Image 1 (cartoon, one colour):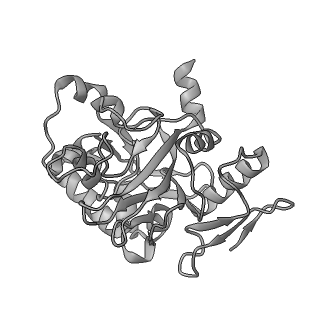
Image 2: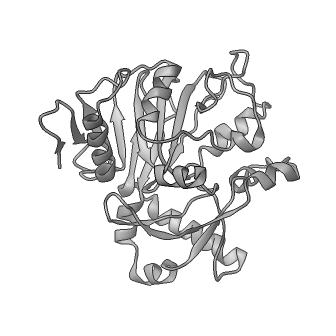
Image 3: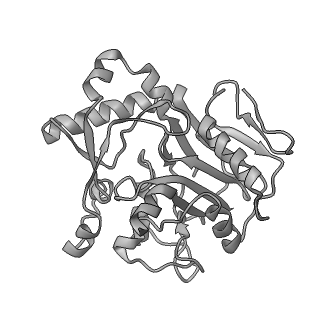
Length: 302
C-alpha cells in the first residue's frame, strides 16, 4: 500500500510488489534542509509501516546528516564508546561504515578497523548490546564501489507471522543475552581488556516483542545473541541460528544496491541487516547515525 500524508508533498511507496509492507521509497522531501514537524511525523509513520525507508539523491555533509538524525531522537555513538577508537569525522556521533583510515587512505587487510567492516556482514540489529535501546539507524552513501557492498535488511515482523507454532511457543517468554563483542570474537577479534568488556556487559532482551509503532510482534534474534534463557549455551546458540535461518529467507529480505547520495533509514526494533562482501581494497565510505529511544534517553538523564 502507498502511504500519503496530505497536504504535504511527501509520498512513500513500497519498493516493489514483492515487499508491499516492507521497505518504502520516499519522495518529496529535501533531507539537507531542516524538517518541519509534520514531515518528521510522516517519516515516523512510514517507518512504523515499512521498517526501512529509502531516499535517493540526497547527498549530505557531515553536519547535515547529524542535524537530520537529531529530528528522530538523541544520537548514540555505538561500540566506539567502549573501544575508544579515534574518528576521522567532525562529529563523535557519526559512525564509520567504510574502509577508510584516519589519514584518508584505504585500510589494508591487516588493519584492525576492518574487523568492524567484516562483522557488519553478519545479521544484526544495531547496539542491542547496550542498556539504552536504540530506535533508528540511518546510513548515507558518500563513496561506493562499482560492484558488491550491497546491504540487506530482513523483516522480523513477517518472520514472526510465519514462524511455525511450535517455535513460537518455544521462544515466546524467553530472553536472549546480547553481547557487544560476541560477533567480533566469532571472527577472531578477541583482544579486549577487562575495562572494555565491562563498559558493555551483556544485556538481556526478549526473543519476541511487540513493536510499539505498528503493534506487530517481532522475532528478535541476531548474531549478538550469545545465550538464551532456560537453555544451555549450545542449545541456545543453535536455536538462535535456527531462528536466523528462518528470518533471513529470501522472501523476507530486501537487498539495496547503493548509489552515491542514497540515504537509508531503518528501525532496529523490527529488522536485521547485514553488509555484503566486496573488494576491501576498493574505497567505500558510508556514514551512519543511530538514535536512541527518546523515552529511554530521558529516563537515563533524569
